[in-house]
Length: 258
Length: 255
Image (cartoon, rainbow over all chains, first blue to last red):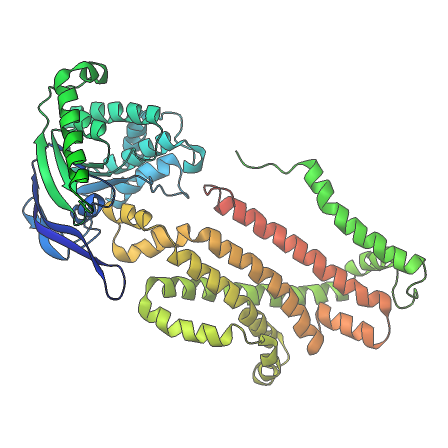
């Protein structure tokens, strides 16, 4: 579905020094897979996601979607950002309807679809509210609905629950899994939380920092549908979390900059 | 969810105005200024009410309003247009920036004699002056608002299928609206000041002209009437703009 082929990204931090954010990344994501990219802050994991989204052009290497080189954003890849990025001048319904309307769906149909999606993410009754009137968790539900509304083939989630409190975060993780298990869209999910990555994913891509490289890819062979309460007691789940945390700890002890 | 205007706020707002009026009355009552030169507020407001119903005075108000609105609207159209264009295109920005830097600090009223010669004594010269003065605050705040639009709003719209050329109208313009309206508010106050100033300098009608005429003939009461009128007009126009603002920005966090 998505092929990332030897992608590197260099940012110019000042006139003389360059920062190598991503170094020689190759990764393929299969259709219908839930893949997390896990790493410390500053490892370039969001940059990698922006490259797949077409928002950032890689300095070298190419990213492909279904065999076609990615040159810009498109409705086949739907982003969900940590900052929500809802349009403040549009109501909840207006935000969710934006995508379908841009895709040329008639207003009546777009509204019907959007209302159904708003209900699916648990916000029935909030259609005419403005984003500023909602809590962080509700805003992120709207952002998810807005992206799902134009039927992207891949969801690109950039630390979507990073700005939320622990309780809201858990609820949204559960709801995301429920929604995902219905239609099994391909998801690339960037996070720095080990629990979150293991709980949600089929595959966890571990990244290291400076320069951003893929350290290891771990297949999370846990049965689905996953229930949080069962999983937390499951020794296999616990082992994945502990193993991954250990690998990151080893990294940190290997020396500065590792 | 919208902040309500409480009666105590209104009361607090009118208190300073009442204080100014009391001070004014006090200056006259205690003999600091002779009544013939500084007429008490009661007489001025009485005269204002008398004047407001006469068609000659109404025509003066209309003349001032035409110039004020004409100049202000031209400033809004050009200020917002150029500001957005400069924020969107580095090429346009590199042309606009030096021009703005040179012209913004220039006292536009210095252009007025030239404008009079070029455009004549009618509305055109005054409208141009008002537009020139109100343009820059609107242009600068539009540019600021449009160039600080959150990148991820633009990305979200592009991912949803909005073509790059439509981003300007569908995302940048609405996202910059709070700054644009702040600029408009400043521009409106400047327009009120400049239209009056222009009419005072050279004009055959308008509120500023009424004031100058009265001053030259030592008609102290008639001198204060246009002054109060332009203040009231400014108050009303600002209120109208505030209403437009709270409607357009109803979705934005506290402004």
